[in-house]
Length: 319
Image 1 (cartoon, rainbow, N blue to C red):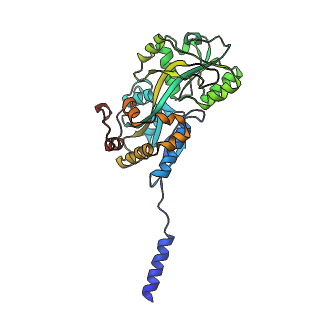
Image 2: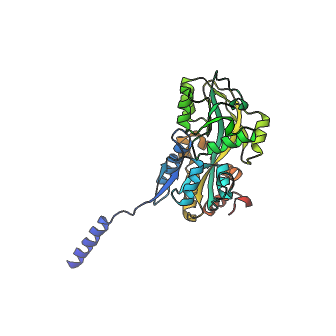
């Protein structure tokens, strides 16, 4: 009888034992009007569904520059950021002059941004040079959009002294254009993006095309810039337009455990259809794109996954 009671007590204790708490992960994204936030939310869901013991949440942030700081301080576990910003943070150049963040590592490159310079039809602005003297949104403070905008403008002889720069996020930029509060705005984001799509439903928009010389000048200041084409009709009434493309990197800290980095990388690529269902930009999320476009060393946990599936890792991507 005593044996029965002990067994029963043990059974009751097992039933009453609390579930093991999941470790929380933070995914730093950007504003809600861009692609980072839905992509980060989709990645969080993949982690929640396929990485045992972890629960992830997408966080709204000021995007690329801020996100690198969040990784460095440990206030975010994963972050999306433009490749040039990631490279500047890792190497201590550009916006990170004097504050190098050598712990930055890549898990993957997700998709390519397009630097979209948008104005309204009838504004008189048809070229990059026409921005001189105009009210121009260069992106939110601490965003990769501002980094890209400043690089492209400066490479082509235009500084903030030549424009009335406004630091607005994507939704604010679209609203300011619609209301006549600014003349043009920069978006460095995957296409299509909701804020421009919404603007194009109420306004006739124009996307400024860059010349060969302007693209070559920009490539002279940033190795990650590439010529790309905004497809015809991706926004209502906008023809095929030559713009600059910039890869986006999923970054983590070298302090992340190898096992966790491996588990996240594996879960993402083995369940990529779930991410593609959230946003079509994830159609670009491939191992090949990662190995071609990532500008900093990969985390050893990610390398373990890539080697496991037979990928050849360039020496430049090894820590």
